[in-house]
Amino acid sequence: MDTNIVLDLLGNREPHHLPAAQLFEYAERGAVTLYLSALSYNNLYYILKKSLATRDLVQVLSQLQGLTRTLSMTDSMIESALASKFTDFEDGLQYVAAQSEPTIQAIVTRDRKGFKHSKIAVFSAEEAVGFVRTPS
Image 1 (cartoon, rainbow, N blue to C red):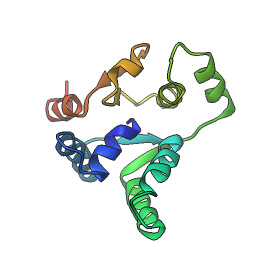
Image 2: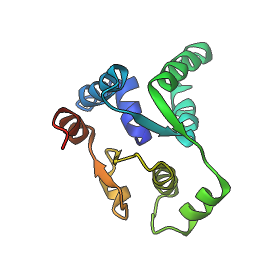
Image 3: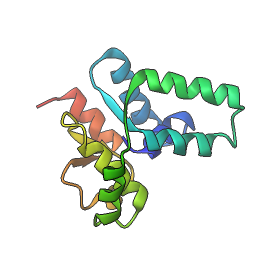
């Protein structure tokens, strides 16, 4: 899952909040496994520290960690992202992190263009919600 989906949830960003919230509800019920890269936690901390007290931010990120699985970043992943065709380095890092977990079926993002070189399916949150509702 790309960082922007989590920001949609935590920031109540409309009209994107509802599908993001639905995905996390599915994760809470065990209907889906959501993955975040370690990079996402850094990005979220940096962005949200402007609007949340440190204590509250740590609590939010701890709750988030309880609903997701974290994908590590390694030297080889950074090298792969740097050598990739991704024009946005952060998107490249998210992609190689997703590739590291064979059970990941899709990257969920609002930045579909950023993942045009992905060999993994790319869904919006709305599409992902529909996929979970009607698994194939």
